[in-house]
Length: 434
Image 1 (cartoon, one colour):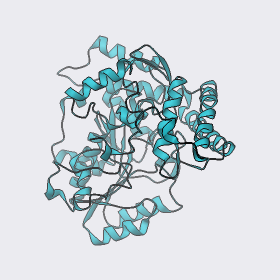
Image 2 (image 1 turned 90 degrees about the horizontal axis):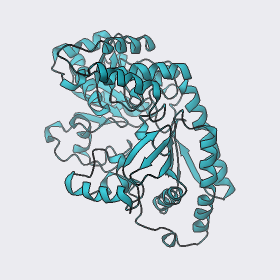
Image 3 (image 1 turned 90 degrees about the vertical axis):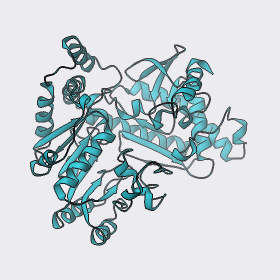
Image 4 (image 1 turned 45 degrees about the vertical axis):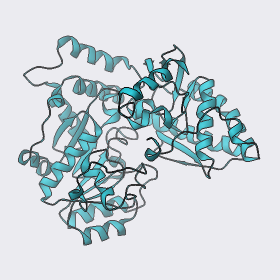
């Protein structure tokens, strides 16, 4: 099992759920065999508790480390803050500079607020938007965190969020009175959203600009017009998409400006910082409600974000990870064709993934993780690309993946999948974890 799995068994006895993030639970990758914990990380390499060096061709800190682990300039900025002092009765000057920097990157925006996690930043944005619009109803499309306002979507229909990244999300503990306040709509379906606005008192539209597929021609423009006609606050959740395909929000590529945007994950390259930016007329509504938290004022996050933005700009990181991600996607397709396998690919170029069809798909995903781990890779069916993923790293990954696709082809041609799996099949969603 290794030291990581031994520690994971202890964790499940003392930490509810084992850890604080669903996406990092070993059962999502390779039950009973995933190394679970790391001792150190650098570039795109991770060392587990047994000292084994592994190349991360998986989710790179769940998308936080676009510049790779342990980026020298970002870490140096954080060390300077630690040496000078992270918290004080007075405010950190870096947060003012960060607000100005983000607004310079998004000229439609005029003000900012900061938090430390994506879920709370989304909750902040919803509170401000509801205060600004004076209406409770929210239309949503995409994944926006764990808070009550979002999970209330599933109070009326337990499957309402199934098409929005994670199926099986149970709203246990969410006040039943929040039912009927949040309404999901299908991506690229403007008619669906238009019907919701006509049927309910919608004051906020909150959506991801894109995740699995690109917006259809005219879709984002239509959402913007609909919001304008009905006095609705439009929020783009860019926690995942931000800074991966442009220097700033993905919406910049499509020429559609929201009223508010939320950024996280890549903004601090592994350090906890998230941002909400918006038009002054909307953001000033924060003054009419209570939104405040002690650790939103710590200094490390803002300092890390400023250093991250500098490094991104110097590297043109968005171009690099986009090109690498497109190359990976193309090579998956070629490898599948070589072995006579049918796969579908999806996602932003730098957040690319592939999937098999059919009942054996979770088993094939588990098999990939099992075999690639033997070859020294953390891998499944998606890659969150970083600037540390050099051509040599990608070449090595595909050299190791080739025989695994060959093994899957054997299973497709009659070999018993269970005969090559060395443990349980990975979990495919939230509902199977308990």
